[in-house]
Image (tube, rainbow, N blue to C red; front, side, top):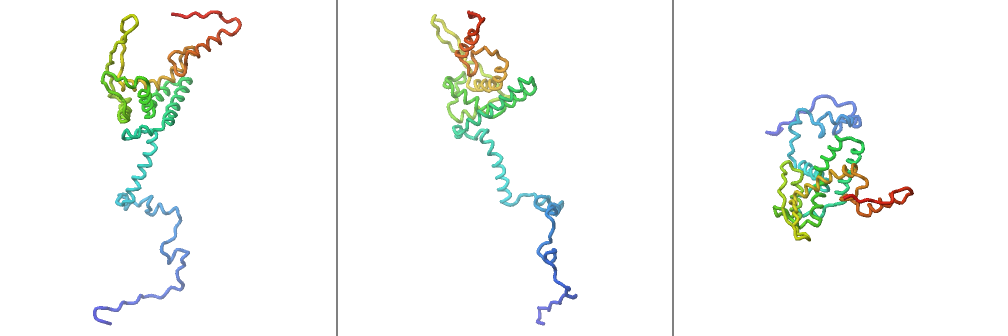
Length: 259
């Protein structure tokens, strides 16, 4: 025995009669256990009581990346119905999907009106007014009609994608307050002038948003023979109604127009 290197003592005891059977769980790297016991022994999905407070802290880059990936995946569906952060993606909105969402809610309102469920009608109207699809559709309708270049008293025009996005965010807000009308006078043939009030662009967007919620009810409860100022109706529908009323035998021969 050298100095500084003491001889190690041999292990006491006899050798086992037979070596450990690896398939039985002895002598292997890890003891075999059923799959259902993994959750009871401090696995990654169900931590033990003593180590749960320490292992839940996310200190690895992989865990952080996984969380950010989950957040991005959850936010991706909102991009179809949602509002992009800037105005660059206004032209990339899929308007067919927007129209489908609005028409689906309006169809539910029509069914609730026919069923006489007033509470459900109010809830669906509230849902439609708060939906981003209806807000996008209202702003698009105002900014694409003939009066899109005519501002109100505030002299604000929604002529850029960024301004349109800002108008969408301002719709259906509890802080909203209507602005006074812009009064102009249109000359008539008899040398007189007819007054005309022009609301601001944001007020017109609010009116278009409310019209989306009220239009299904008015179409259900309005007179079937009334064709004036109604959606997808014109003078040809009135002519067809007159023809159907006069073509039968015994039908009236004259139509009187009321003043």
